[in-house]
Image (cartoon, rainbow, N blue to C red; front, side):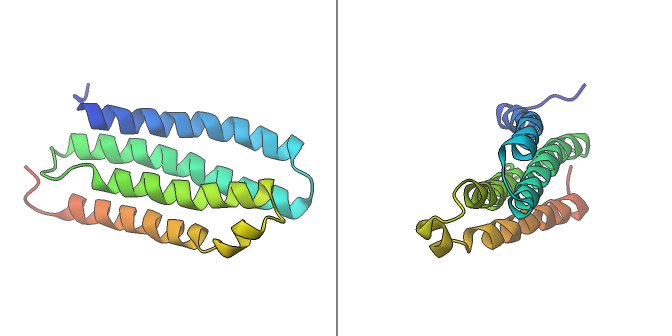
Length: 133
């Protein structure tokens, strides 16, 4: 079994919680949201939340299996921030489609996508770096 430090355990717990929450949110979106377009956008947010939650778990397990990294869990931290921005904005836009404030901060979702991508690229660079151990 892997030995995880406190932060790694927290990221695994967050990832698992994201997957569990995505199941409930998917059900809510299917039965509680009106309109095909809103259901579709809600479904996209749920899908990303689920896969990024699983991704956080994978990041921790792969990092742990390949040896401890000298730096903190930055890829996971970026993934969490990016997922919160992207999914949070989509969820908010679906819940309050006519909100004026949301139309002014619509850039948060694409920024979240960029941050999620950055997290995976940071993880890739960390993984291929030759001096891991």
